[in-house]
Image (cartoon, rainbow, N blue to C red; front, side):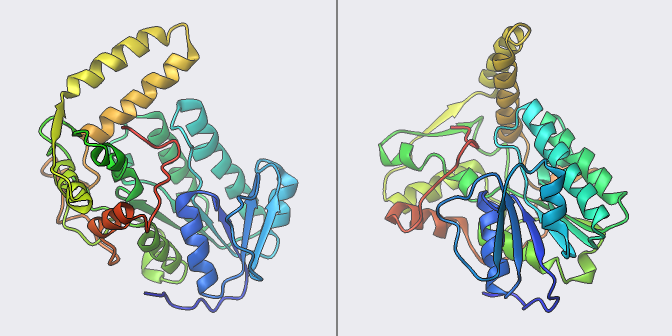
Length: 324
């Protein structure tokens, strides 16, 4: 399902085009006839050659590169995200790098900035969430027309146990497998939502949580769908959340003398956060995560993606974002 053609002829600057969501946004922009400028440290082999695509290679912190890319552009979409979520990386990228490009956008008189954030910042406990929120606040105060999109869990982040089940191993869940839920969203559905936000005045100057077509699914339900896609019996192993607490405690002590252990402790905290916090809209009135309050978009379903993975039609690349 294609989106509306974008009539504004000025180029769109896309940050983070080498990432999973960034690539999906790039495809969506190009499919609508938009001229796109992508600053990158290095060009991935699988990025397309396209007459509407201009790739500029270099240090993304370089002010000269920023000025070159921004000149003549009127809109920017940032899909920048730290790869590890470790505190230093998170603040350098989620806040620092985004801030540099916001400053460049203001200097170039760019009119609109669309930020890909995350739904998990609602109840911040982690460094990368604090960094995201700090930049969200700066963007809102910038004077630009802004849109902050906070999506729920991505398909790829819910697919890491495919090979475990394929190899006859049990599906791992924390607690009873129903501690959390989310409305999974595909890369393409999220990309369409982000690009649609360029020309939808109802989305201007708003923070927008968004999920896939629903209903909300628990990890236990995701395990059932994975097993069904593979045609294997489902075996479940229940992991106590306290197991993560032990890991966090040990790594935190080691982190007093080892920066590497300190980063690993933060990664374990990230794992615990996702094991115990739903990726749904938080309702402060009831102190619960709400399926009903979480908006939906798109048509792609997680179960279909699982079948595509099982058949080899889709290939899973989770990069650094893996819990299991």
